[in-house]
Length: 248
Image (cartoon, rainbow, N blue to C red; front, side):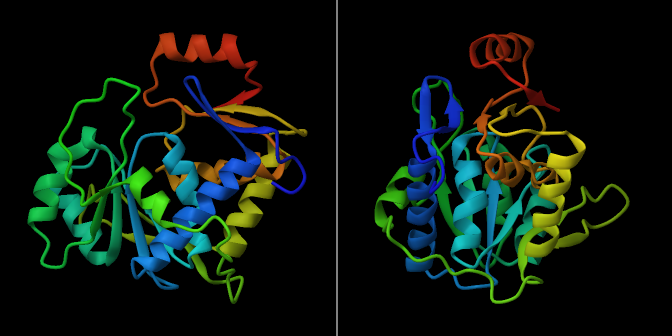
């Protein structure tokens, strides 16, 4: 945002945000989470497809000192409930499309997180709203001048991911800030990613935090094209419209 404030950072359909706007949204999210009681080390769960709010969260949650817990959107209610309980989620950002699993999962919890509905009203998305507040309303609570709570130590957790639990209960795996940074650098080196790439999201961001590409692409001042679903028509259109240089 300091180096290329007006460069496009995120694209979703006809919506775009430059790096200055992405930073404002991340700061607003961090401020709003802190205002809502999220403290360093607290977990913020995400049940989202590859939408801009998912990218916001990969910056805004750590800026509040929080730990990202991106949920596998294909899991059933019982497993999701276990992860939310075991990870001690304070906040859950969720898309109405996944209400069929999230609703029953929340009903199983004794200690419920703050539920935030992430809406894409410009697109036809089904599902039930379960939250106390919408994502844009939450952002409106936050201050874009919020001073991020940078990690006190490089080993501080940035993310908490879970296995799918195919042979037992899901196992939690912690990623620290140092590991995320090194993995992002590794992405750039292995992919021979030059400055200003255009990255098309087909890999789920919930999978190992998108292999750290939410951070790697920004390190190179690139553009991240969000797709809600991986469908041939949408992929071909994005490739044609945005001069995509990288996808996986």
